[in-house]
Amino acid sequence: LSRLRNRLEIALSEPMSRESAEATLEVTVEEVDRVLGTFNAILRLARLEAGAEGERVRMDVSELGEELAELFDPACEEAGLSFKSQISRNLTILADRDLVGQALSNLLDNAVKYTPEGGAITFSITRGPNGTVDMTVVDSGPGVPEGSRELVVQRFQRMDSARTQPGSGLGLALVDSVADMHGGSLILSDAGGDPDMPGLKATLRLPRV
Image (cartoon, rainbow, N blue to C red):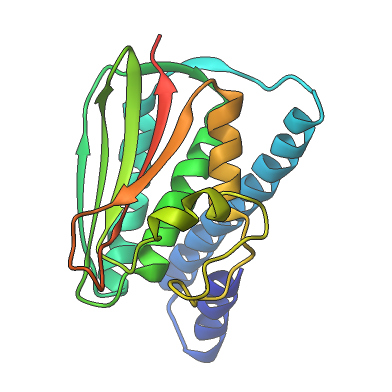
């Protein structure tokens, strides 16, 4: 919402042609749709946790991955980060597309938020072990200490010593809940960086069909 407001304020403060105004409105509508999608996904998550059935469909997760890569590439560039993606094709899962998309967006958002300028983020979707699909985000930020990884996936829990950016404390909790609902798991580990900046490797692993 803040990004959306900033874009509108800039549009109002600068004279622009009809074409530029239309382009700005189109981008704004897309942003509004994404925000609504986020709210709807969270509401759906609450209903699922209450026992309601989600809308699960067979989907090639690579298509979703390519959409997210296209969305986050410019966001990383704007933040002064390098971004690479590796999306394998023909990986089918039975899932609620909105919830999986929200979970992956949360992982990517976290990586952008906590990786210092000049750092790197990689996003991959590959075949995992034992008939699974691994959707992985790796960053070069401060990471999460091994002893705290169970804590950060709980709702409203945050590692302020390592990650001081403002936030609700719901991001990884939502990812973990989405994984559980789909019979999968969220796996957190160091990304292999320096001891003072080990990075975080976050993998959403779901069954392949």
